[in-house]
Image (cartoon, rainbow, N blue to C red):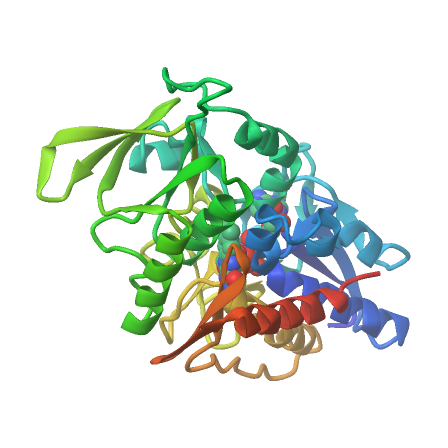
Length: 392
Ligand SMILES: Cc1cc2nc3c(=O)[nH]c(=O)nc-3n(C[C@H](O)[C@H](O)[C@H](O)COP(=O)(O)OP(=O)(O)OC[C@H]3O[C@@H](n4cnc5c(N)ncnc54)[C@H](O)[C@@H]3O)c2cc1C
């Protein structure tokens, strides 16, 4: 490849921020292969998911959890398009942007995370896109935080017996009993004692993907914070209530008051990938090999929640997205200089640290579990160390 290669990066997700920094460092050392680099990212700042529960709990300020992409790439040869990509055609090597522009690429890397498209979402859970606080993209949560906080601090509007002298707790719910749902429920219960938080964990219960020790520790923490665990399925989200059904009795729904409903039900593949021409997995995520390279188009790479390795199953998590960063950077440089790619060996197990609202956390590592204030301080140390790498 003698002529300059146009590398387009879609999204500034956890893997791409490493790639960006790597490319900027190479450019400053005049080591970059002949690359023209464009970044498509709708947000100037991207938020580190590991610290978001701490942000909701009031333990961190926004700036501590934000990576300023505009500052990171300032004075670098990277051209930034501050909008969403709305589609790709990998065969004609084009990316379509929401501002109407079209970029032609030689090499494409996708790290746009998992989406929560409104039409897809409402098919799974009617009313969710209109009435829920969505955790993805995290940038929207950050942008709407002031009004969310105001609403959480205000008295209940639905309880008829609530009065200034006899306030009734504001009913709030979090839908999803996985790590994100648990952490957000704990953060809300800790930060806003005027709320009654319900965590709708479905039939599977709390932390179904963790070992029994971790699930028990999650139950204990939820109990201590006064969180009500509801082992039912949400049928529909309405403005001030959830319609629930018991797995054993789906024909007879019950109502749960909820003046604010948060959605933490895991990830969905972005809709716009369907027309891309890329080979996708059965859930619609980009199918990649051990080099984080598309199995159908060698000039396309993908990492993070939007990608799905065909050689191994692993959970969609920030830890895996972060770990993919160095491998992605290495293979993109190797590909653009026509060298052999190197496999990204996925870790067999990872350390997961669950924040419990206050300065207390639960650790999960394979079949092991630890908990305590020291686990939170360990998490805080790891998260801040990560953020320090990207502070400009
Ligand atoms: C509250 C919460 C807490 C979590 N805590 C943890 C944790 O402690 N540990 C852990 O391992 N995981 C955690 N996760 C999961 C973690 O957030 C994700 O797995 C991780 O963010 C995935 O990273 P990513 O690189 O795939 O993309 P993301 O971090 O989602 O970033 C994708 C970026 O691409 C942008 N984008 C989206 N669409 C487009 C488009 N069309 N064009 C251009 N740009 C686009 C987005 O706006 C975003 O900036 C948590 C998730 C939540 C919601």
